[in-house]
Image 1 (cartoon, helix red, strand yellow):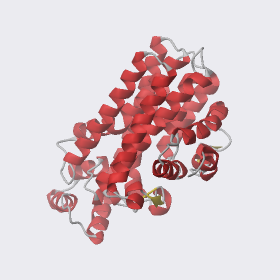
Image 2 (cartoon, helix red, strand yellow):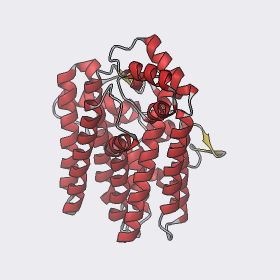
Image 3 (tube, rainbow, N blue to C red):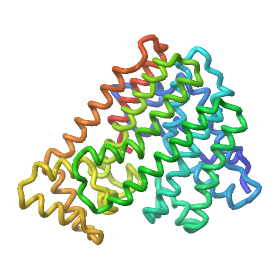
Image 4 (tube, helix red, strand yellow):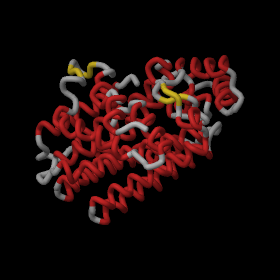
Length: 353
């Protein structure tokens, strides 16, 4: 069984992951992004690794596999960043929530992979591919329980428990909505936005809101950070959906069109359907509603969407959310924290993985 020091060594860390992205506005993520919370994130990794250790060796092995498989650590980073914006930041007090947020995120991915019957994530074998669905589901349950145990042991105000419980409920609702609507054409953009709000935006909103509250921000500034988190969460998911059309498995750990083949009708497709002529609309509809799409048919659907303004339209919507995020930041926010929030928004809008 791995000890937490060994688990930490397996993981490339938040910095290496983010550095691999690209330059944003001429500033490298390696040298600039999240420097203000670098010490916090360096302490976060061993805390995360220690949190998944169990008396049951298999659970620890599964947890070690998940921790060492990478990840952007965006959720704990945003939480810690918001906490730094308050006047009462205390790293020791903030760390259990930071770890809990990442555990909740990881647990949701483990369950998501079971639902999708996915074999790989981030270029590594999924838990279900490596150990089977039963172990994967129970491991996800264990991670959820560990997250709440960490928070309970830290003795936070009850509002923290309520927010995290609401988060898990919302994540579940988002997954159910997504699973229930696969291979179906949404009634409109609003249905798509509701799904990604529950799946992603509410999570980042709660990260920023909890960070502001635990860091000692006043109510108005905490609310502003919550809106910031919601806006970048919406942009994050729209960008993620765009990557399905723009990137390859080398960049995003899954082949182009993977989500499309899974039956997820996203904003670029919705837009394409609204601007295509009757013939094109009928062809694309037939393709994306077919659960037995071949590789050639997936490629054809991608080509049809790319020939429209679907990608540009979705990018414009993502950019609008990012602009809102930048404009809503608290007026008296520490300048280093503000600059990092702005860079995080730029990263989300232009990320390539």
